[in-house]
Length: 406
Image (cartoon, rainbow, N blue to C red; front, side):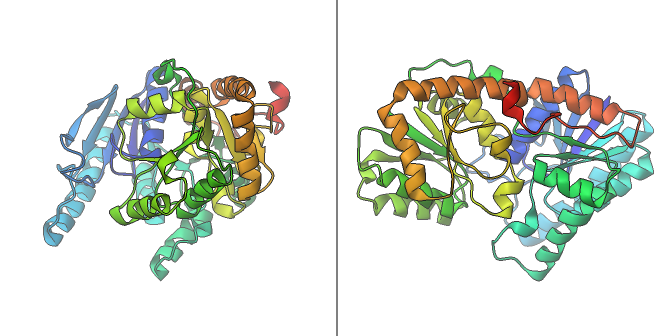
């Protein structure tokens, strides 16, 4: 089966969405598929991401920048001409593959409705299956947006899945939305996804908590710092692994420098992936507080899969998708609310009972192997795309009470 992965630029360097592209692609390749990741235009910074090729192969995955340039140009005219060139070449590439009978499906990962519409039309013209990977509920994002962006977000959330043949959803929330609006649409749940083979690194647990996430999640980062401060101790350190714009990273550094325990809080940014894995696997506990809002209920942070693979005790909150896979003091530590004191109390359990934390880490690893392994999920996605019955419904579990099966 030949698949073109489109809609999101940056491969093979990027954060959660690019990592999801990699792991879904690798899972499909294990089933004998040929996958090409097609980036429309370059987005990378020459200074921060030197050596990125415009075309190549990364861990068995072919990729290409349709504009011919992997970097974002500073000149306005040239930058936008390359976007047009990339768009045209992207269409030519997909149609060319179809004419050679080297295309079976177009897999779409994008944050914009207009992209879904364009790719679904191209797939229909080529007579191939279109599949949307839906990972966010955009209308729930509270970030200030233009009117056009708000309209696009609404169309994406409520109409994008109607444009395609099949839908992958990262959460029950998004699956239920699809089923309520388009009951016959084939849908498959693909939660957090991780390559366990990359986490074979064995390390002794060290006395620190680790949070990894985008610097754009300012509220969450401040929450983590405040919860750590409530512990009122310095034996266990706090590691913050985050990246973002210069302004966002400066905000995180300011929050650390203004904290009374600043010498015990360590900031890391733009780490090589192997170094990040080392920090994951050496930590006593891994933090991922989720908020009681539509955004966090709809998403499933990529880091949860990585946390499981690292055999770390996961500390989170009882909101959204986390409840389908984890239970407090069974395979994680979960506070009842997005409350700094409650979250700090869960962190204190790790400080006072490290053996329990290690046991919870091993339990989370087994949970991850069962539900988040990229090879297992790759087979599900392969069968989902290959299936001929358009009325079939696919789910990654048969019972919402996942914990009862462990």
